[in-house]
Length: 208
Image (cartoon, rainbow, N blue to C red; front, side, top):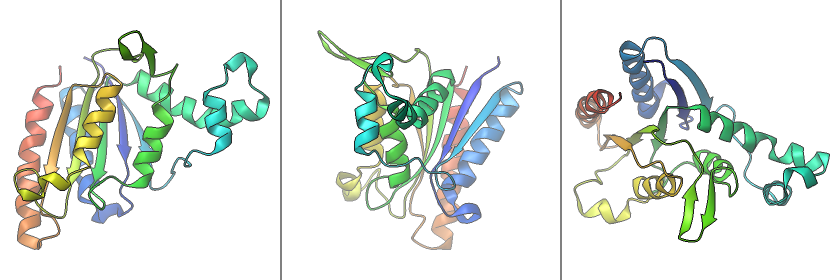
């Protein structure tokens, strides 16, 4: 089966990034399983989307047929990011934990794609997704400490936020690949990567 894969990386660490290493491996395994798939990559460290300003927010809430040229230009980057999301069957996101949350570059991307009238709307029963159904999301989550099964879990605003905001858009088929404890020494890094690779293989098996 041919898929369109949207690949998002947010770590600025280049070759030293564990999340980038694991997103690259995810793409490799997806291509082995689905060799005809097309991959579109957004590197949010090299080419970050701007944080929202007043002009851009104004453009979001102005009907397209009522926008000025300046408002159309202000909405352009957001429209492009949303078009990529709509076209994707699989979304692979590299999301390192920074200060218990996510990098601001990844948050900016989210702010550009969560738009009423384009990716969701408010109906009688509350918010409704406007995205095509059936998308698979794979998130590579790297963390310096141990959060998933420890008292530190209460401080995890990384995965909880990502699951909530993606679920708001109707993206509920989400697998997390966790590389935890990568700030705890060389041996901990090795163990974290081995465990993450095992999780990654399981997630790939679930992709139709």
